[in-house]
Structure formats: structure tokens, C-alpha cells
Amino acid sequence: MLNLKLKFPNKALIIDFWATWCVPCLGDLPNSKKLYEANKDLPVEYVYICTRGGSNI
Image (cartoon, one colour):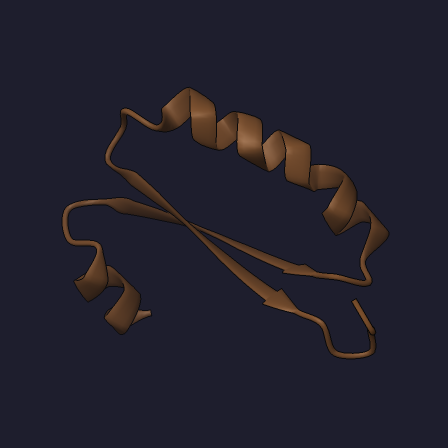
């Protein structure tokens, strides 16, 4: 977390954990994109952390 804060100083971080095999996660991706677009002028950085463990995608 500290490394992320250092990489994006003076910005709030929104960290989105998701997985390639998670149907609700995949369904939420369009909403996440809308949120990003609506707030792109704010000092916010979006960080997406994905796992594909258990998936062939």
C-alpha cells in the first residue's frame, strides 16, 4: 500500500480487486469504467488488481 501511495502522491486511491472467473466482478466492470469517466478530473487514481487463478482466461 505504501508503494502505491508513493507512486500516486496527492491522490486518493480506489483499489478494485477482481478475478477473471468472478461473474459479479466481470458484470461490474462497465460500472467501474463509468465511475472512472465521471471522476477523471478529480485527484483519484484507480488501481485494478486481478487474479486469474483457477481460470484459463
